[in-house]
Amino acid sequence: MQGDHASNVYFVKSGLLKAYYIRADGKEHIKSFLAEGSIIGSMVALVDGDPCTFSLVASEATLVVALPYEVLANAAQTDISLANALIGFLSVYGKRKEQREYQLLSLSAEDRYELMMRDMPEIAGRISQADLAAYIGITPQALSRIKRRLSR
Amino acid sequence: MQGDHASNVYFVKSGLLKAYYIRADGKEHIKSFLAEGSIIGSMVALVDGDPCTFSLVASEATLVVALPYEVLANAAQTDISLANALIGFLSVYGKRKEQREYQLLSLSAEDRYELMMRDMPEIAGRISQADLAAYIGITPQALSRIKRRLSR
DNA sequence: GCGACAAATGAACCTCGGTTAATTACGGCG
DNA sequence: CGCCGTAATTAACCGAGGTTCATTTGTCGC
Image (cartoon, rainbow over all chains, first blue to last red; front, side, top):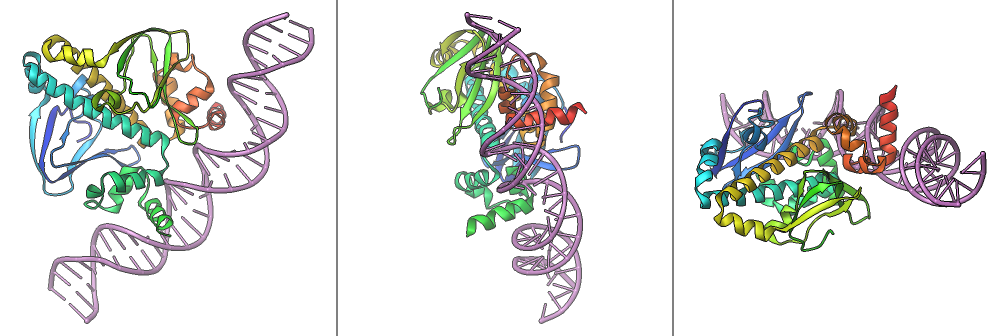
């Protein structure tokens, strides 16, 4: 949960997680969806021990493996291959966030919707319109409007 | 430059860089400002060898040290302390991007302006309104309106 | 002090997405 | 089959920010 001093890294074995923020006004925005094979942990919480800025919830029955980041980080101090695996993970994470920043800064909601349907149709099909909208950064109503605009 | 297969990491010794995208329609959006002590490199370009998605330009006379990422990555394969330094850098990078994602998803332009003036006033004072607006994700006119709104 | 150019502001109009509220599918389930 | 709760759609209105263009304010060189 948002606010926790959680410090675990989670490996998603099966199912689907969503990572989301709750804003002061109660609105929910979705950071990302984590399907089978994904790894998730809060950089903010892990790096500085700050309270985590987002929450995780399962959208489907989900099996995860939790590993304290501390264990990982400590082991990486002495194990070179683990350290490099961690570098690989962090690089991919950085790349994903870099792309998302680009999308949020430069694309309209409509563009982001089309991109989502193109790049991750499998996940798009597994979630509700409301979640899809919250991921794109708009309301379900606005998403419905966009779908109508595109269909004709 | 955007589109390059650049693969350097840059250390900013002095001055100020801006990292920005040029969109298809010619608009410019600013990813980040890099002041003294910053490190910058494109995750996308570094990880997969994809063309870089943004450009770098100096806003002030700037001195940088460029290091091919490949050299860094290769050295990290055998040098545990370097690997851990890299892990530290990537973690901080991920954390910054995580925060930016949050801001772009959850805050209004006005909120983002106030946050910028609070969190990085030093940089805000060194750049033009146009660049400040491009960083926040709005036009200079909209920024001017926001400033007026806030001043009364 | 003055001209020239860029930066910043301002005004008028438009569009997209938010807000509120009503309406229409779409399942389970008795 | 009909009932009920949830998800999705639609409509009407509003406001923030974009667009275009004009005006003002700085700033620099002379």
